[in-house]
Length: 245
Image (cartoon, rainbow, N blue to C red; front, side):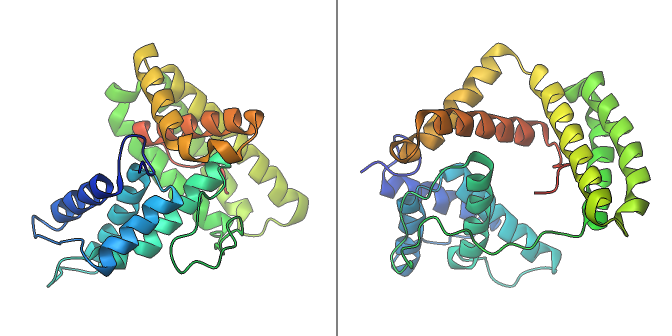
């Protein structure tokens, strides 16, 4: 049975997760068997793309690393919440419905999960720091993208003081401007890709969305593909989210 990624069956999906988990645990062997195997198969049953699952594992392990050296390797069970969070972000970005609930789910496939939106001022601070980090990648990203990043960082720095007290229309204007800047930066990054690179990202987006297409109208599927390609471009170029979702 094919699962989240086209061409991957349950066993191969689990092997890829196990291999990545061992690598992130400095080579410690962490077997995915028994309940852990059922858990990872549940990710596949939901249609969670392998790339998304691995990103969730990375997020979990990176957070654990910030707490200091670990005495034991991180088990896949500890990564479940982060994997589901990343998948939820992926679904919001693409508009894809859930494919299925994992065993023990509540059956409410399309109910949105609870999510805390960070304060606007804190979001701007993180965005400024991420924009500043792009300057060191000028050779890879090109002068246009890094030039925009520098200019946008200065503009966001000016908005940061306003954001602490902005309410109502003032806050809405800041959010609208963030959306504009985010789209401009993403468009500039997309223009740096070769036709071959862009074609590969489109093919990857098609593969990730294939398990969900039978529940999506044609226009929704096209919009989801476009949104996912944008997300892949963002990840490839390591662009921050300037908009506040």
